[in-house]
Amino acid sequence: MQMLEPTIEALHFELVDLEFAKSGRGGLLRLFIDRADRASGPVTVDDCAVVSHAVSEVLDAADPIGGHYTLEVSSPGLDRVLRKPAHFAQVVGERVFVELKLPIDGRRRYLGRLSEVGADAIVVEVDGRECRLPFERIHKARLRSA
Image (cartoon, rainbow, N blue to C red; front, top):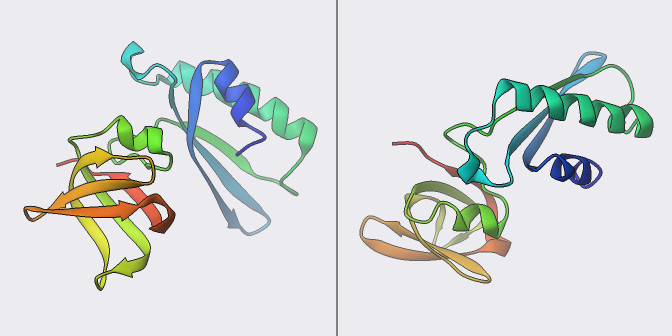
């Protein structure tokens, strides 16, 4: 991710997530991008093409993936991945799904409304109860459409 972020950011986008799935002799490298300024509208097909071209040049020069692979660039969609504190801050008040690395009070999965983002944790309201979830314990998190 770190190799690609400067190129993507120079185009005024943010690399939200990256997935690599190996299959046979090749694989699929999938990038999820969003606009750096989300208020300027959704990511378009043309935006994805511009980022794909720029990223292809970086990947061709560095060759970090041995063998054949397919590059796919798309928007994060409705159930977008939340990785950075800034991602969480953008969706306060929305429904989120959070899975922890280690349980808190016997629970690893939380689905509820994100009510607060702090320096070291988020607060998710689940069944009328506020649950403080430290960033260091979060394994994965997604925005959940209704």
